[in-house]
Image 1: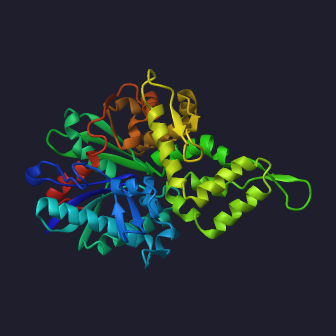
Image 2: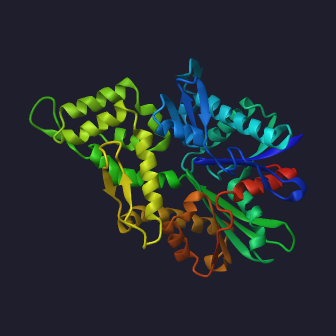
Image 3: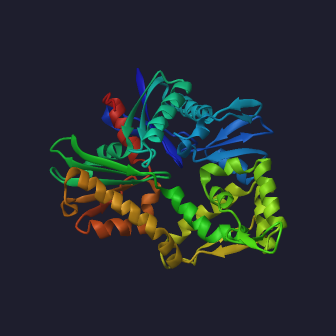
Length: 418
């Protein structure tokens, strides 16, 4: 029974095997080692696109429904809600399953093997503040793998897989701390390198906070006020005013919730806000975003601005391109403002790393190496928060975007089950 290692991530997905004990990543889209975890239900072609093709269809203005951040919905009631997509009533477990089935098909075509089992990565905690949701998330993902055609799926904590893949970065006896900052969660594993290929896992811990939370914070702080967040709305009767409700703006700034905002109720609510707005130009932009379904275009623009703001100081001052609202329009995104805005989130990540060591009763000064994995681990504010707490530890990045799947591939070849 061939087993496929799969890192199903909030932002990106990867798959791999390890023939002869050497990780081999499978190209799931052209020559790319990672596949964006995104789908687009193309209304004209009557098909589901995934990965870069899904994002390209959205940005090209194709008619259909785009979804990203599906992993963030695991464990919520939304996973079981059915929606009409391409003349089928599907729930979100179906959608995740179809994405995973495509990964399975592409891996089989690339390797000539049939994969009846999967070793899947999982965050240490899907939902750090809710045990019931956390358990349900795992069951949702297990069911998605079954619907995708896998006879068996086993799970391994993602930072533990990354620890295994990066074990050679440590000397025998060294203590390493994996800092895995993904799109939706931050996960940590403290381990000791043995004298062989084996490692000793001392503690793992995780919180529900990741790169999409950075995007959301920047969007709420910089973009949503331009759409009317915080604006005064006149009472329909009388002379008083109240602030525009935050819910619609919070959801519009959240990748996984954007597809749910294009229904008639939300559009009517936005139109009512515009009718009584003290600043109608701002609320008119909100109505435009909903009517023209520009929520993901804005989210991509914020993400791109975040990446530019994380670049070296010598580069041009970053901006958020909001030309979809007004031709050639941009919003400044000063690096100092970005750092101050994101620092509270980075400090939460730093405190979670400290909690990992507390679970193992290890002093932070004993850590020899910080191993950063996950796309959002590349953020400067994250590195600063961790360096502050582990000043003696050397920093190792390695394969930030593929370390997890490399570890899963190694474990799948060794028939490790978790």
